[in-house]
Image 1 (cartoon, helix red, strand yellow):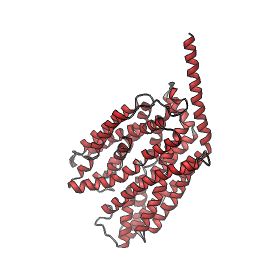
Image 2: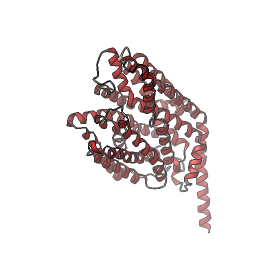
Image 3: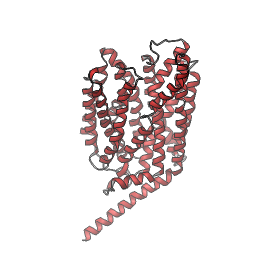
Image 4: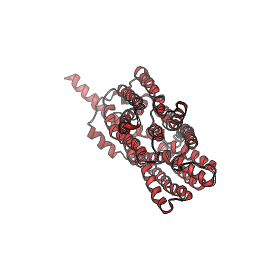
Length: 443
């Protein structure tokens, strides 16, 4: 149920269908994406708070139902009501934030150690898989039906099905039930106390900043790489697009397929590598993430070196670079489970998501576009310079990825200390509860 839901609830579908009404790189086309990201960021902390205190699967199912109904309703909006479509994207962001903030915590309470890593990997492989399918589904539905609205009518049916499956069959585990003594913790601290504790948790803060670096790169790539490859083909005179700013459907489909495959490979390789490295060092989780990020930066840099001469070579570099980049999705969530106590995990997931979007994909497509436009002004009519200016702008991504790798290395420094503190916190909570129960029984 979680896997199906995570595949269909993806932000890539926000932009794909509406690109047929407006120039995909115009301000109006980016507006739905911006509203979606902003509403997602604002709603995530709220659902994080609720997820730590109330029935999680009910909140989760209601969020998926809400997302499905709003998405289906938005497919009937015509050109004349563009503002209403933008509003619907904001409502979709609210529905998705409920799902993204709560789902990992339920999985974390159902499994532990290597089993939890594997199950989180299975869950998180659906994120890049869904993003890639967003390109394929949006284009295919539009072509098959001859109407872009149908791109928004397929996934809601699956959403309603997945929400029903979660509500009926997924158990609601006790918070921390997979942790030693965690399932018996009843005491909850205030929201301000939770936030203060998370701010002091160095592993959590550094891993959240590293996650933002991943979001920055994936957000920029999802928007601009198909266009970059189209411009590369124009320079090579292999394929001439009538309007160079609009990426060809072929590039979008290929890039979407690569994203699906690399997402699958990345999380599986990440889970297997982490399991092996844990036999050598207890700091395996952040170290594997750091190495994968630094390796990804190398191959992403090579994209801009080989694209002018070989599109196939560029696709190979994208494939390897994305595989290494997606390798840390599930591991980052597992790090959070280790260093944050069970009664704060939904809040922690929500604010990590908030940080990732705020510092990552909420602004990276705009920033890359602004840099490219600024560089392009010098030779506005040059096809070669349009290609080079976008490439120079996208070169910011590997630098951000390297910075993310540094953050994961910093996480490795504090990981064991923060993990031990979280375990001691559980013991203290449990002892206090036992003392309180003993006093009440004697009274």
